[in-house]
Length: 494
Image (cartoon, rainbow, N blue to C red; front, top):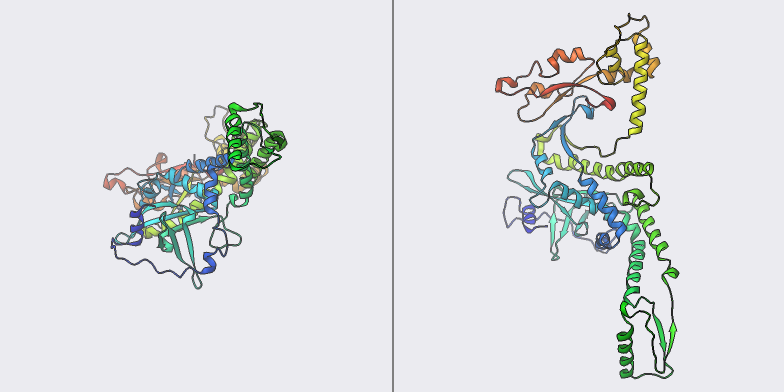
């Protein structure tokens, strides 16, 4: 972390003599690792560069999280996510899009995701300034350099950052945003899959090193030269130098050895004896199991088909990417946005869902809607109303005129054909969508998210589908920022 950032954190108003926030002394029990979870954390971070399977899993997950799009919304009065209005201009959005001068949002998220995958912890340090009382920068910090400072009364008094030179810097609670997978025995730290894998990762790494040394050592395992009589130092050195000169290295493999007054005792352990292929495959499987990582996502194609590849992609997004994104969303909404005070009231960050569409399920739903529409049309209901009722888009109708009104009630007919009236009513609703920016007038902002039961009601307030009749933006030379859209499937506007 840059020295200027530490100065900004400690010296709120630019006063170089400012005193850091007081902390409770670090207890001896905690320094020895009372909960023990910080032990070996640097090794956990380093493990990504030493085991290829671990690198592939962490790298792919981190890049998937970094590639997700984020948006800022104003909450709707209805409480429905689909009724929210997007906010395109706010200081919090600017900070999240560019956390600091060194990191882009993508790099920032990827670095934090790597830390969380490897250690179960992700740390952000917030640079603020008292003069403006707003966050200026966000910095990702290595978990092995951060230490919570417990307090017997308030549980936590703050944090201690240890720099590369060993200097410790005290940070307040509001200076730090901590995202973690909770540790079952340590309330102050997190836990990650690598902690459960350290022994297995060592086995994978050592097997790779043994394989490397096998080839460096003449592509033959070692043996013993048995000498009947003892050798003095000069004779021993001479024998060793001659042996290395004639037999060490791949180019000297399988040369015939001539020994004077010595007997060669073979110690053969071939790669088959060591079962290298099986050992390394077991290691890969254990690593994938700890992360819950689907095999097709590692690029393996030996036993992969289209069906399990698609299932693997959905599993990867739903159970690995989305939970981490939800943790980031909670940190943004409950830790970062409150730092902006009243200007952030009613706002929330959210991500665009990365789970791939289930094409097969959507096709079945479309078929079911079409069948319901055909039954409703056969019962005599108006084609336009039928399409709206079952959640299908408006389609030009070229059939016969609407049949006479049937005597059965609408509710009874729809309930019998589609399984219930409430979902059909929800499918007919129209919702107000407003672009929330500096040019959005108060009446339009207040009416954003409002729902109408049908098109006629919506168009009374929004002629031709856009332009609120109570909009006052025209008085200031601005076009109306609102429109009404019909909810499609799953409650989304279409």
